[in-house]
Image (tube, rainbow, N blue to C red):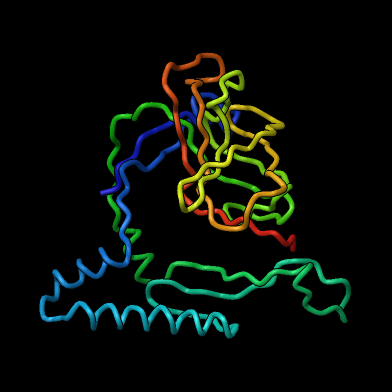
Length: 239
């Protein structure tokens, strides 16, 4: 069962427009997936199962690294190249082009998705939510961060009470150390525009927006935090 609540859609000027936001979605890592498989198949051994899963993942990575496409009942991958080529004789240049792996659902994934039942639940305490982070230099969405570049953060309830130093856009590394983006160029409920620090270390980050605003005019006594549910990667070289 997929629980959802309705939130005011601040990305559209249409009156009385709301959008669904899934709530209390549980995530499953490889260890939990293995335990669920063993619960259905008690005759399997944990070490053998983990080894088989690892071999499956490793072989897919080898195929992708070799430029191949993967087609399984669960998902399909297809390589693509982003960037502009200057004429028919131009060739791939890592400084101007980037190879991407596009992912789509397979037949079993689509079947499983079509079977999800949705249930509306009570709207939770209003908090900011992040839908997209656009990195302007790399022209990517919810993927890369270019140190010294500019990002656009799209979502809802994002406006910052800038007089409060605890408000802001924060990047958390894998040690949970936070970097606050000091320069906010645009501060609106549905969009923030900010500059990334030029000395931002390369690595993986989780983005948080922390604000005490309940809406664009009323400030709460407690901090409201919204997170992007995808990991962002800071890269030093601009492609």
